[in-house]
Image 1 (cartoon, helix red, strand yellow):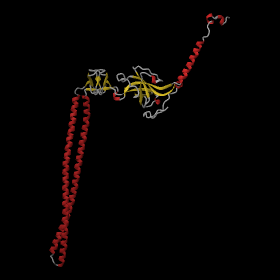
Image 2 (tube, rainbow, N blue to C red):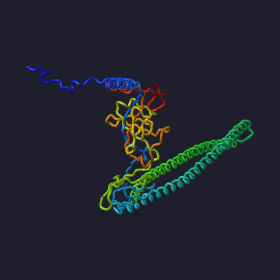
Image 3 (cartoon, helix red, strand yellow):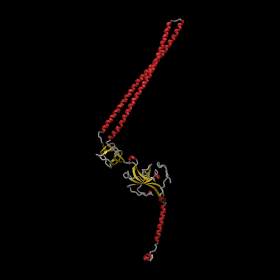
Image 4 (spheres, rainbow, N blue to C red):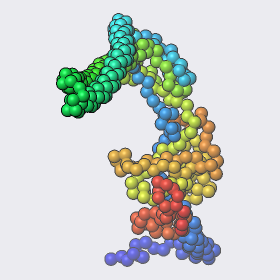
Length: 425
């Protein structure tokens, strides 16, 4: 059996090949440089970050994309704008007509009737108030007359008491004179008759006073009754007028809606889409007619981050942003050498997720960094990638962390919703 060497004899060219010392030295040099580079990179600073993606939006909700709806049932008569048209506030966008042409006239008739009823109730209230004043004046007059009768009866009672006292003294004197024989019995009889007459007159004066007092009480009750009756009538009329006023307001609202035959632009902006065709298409109240994109005075970026990264975020954290369509070169670990990215800072972190475990953050321009692109470049809806900057660590630690699947290192701050904490290593 032949051996390996016997099967494949050594060629003369191979026998002439010998080791090349410079090549070996170059190899060891490259290996040493690789080891030194690895050690150097292990101690190189590395910027930890959290990635997110989203889009640019307007900070104010009123400046975000909004729809213009139909206020009444009807159909589009004429569009005054087209897609891409720029409008100002209160510019006419579209003319619409109601499905029932006679609705406005009927509503105006109902409104006139309701206002007439409201006016008649107002006149009735005014008449009742005038009648109450007259009735109360008459009642006050009767009360005053009753008071005067009481005063007269009291004076009459005083006179009757004085007359009775005089008659009693005269009777006693006549009786003494009769006993002495100085006067006739007839004088005593006449004196007793005067005394009885004075006593009867006193009783009649007392009865007159009591009757005057009862009459005064009756007039007081009548005055209270007049006041209560008119108060009830006026309150009932006021309630009826309130009902009539309540009936006027819905009619005015319906009439205002029906009279809105022209839809005006709520804000200055650009018409993005027209959603209804003129002519035969029937519209329902509340149906969308057009989409308006208002002009934006303050643009922010809406980023979505994973729920695992949300606890690491705080208000005021720095963000690097790359906008779609804007040439950029981003070095995640070294943001200082990035080109074409823009600085920002977190201004809002949502309190809850979007239902899929993602959390929304809003990033505003960093006043200490380069200004964001102009509005004609950075329109609403432009996609953006973002990197929230955390701590600086060594590259070796970052490789070790990623190899072991540990989370990034975060900073300690105060309340994340207040953003008043101080960063510490």
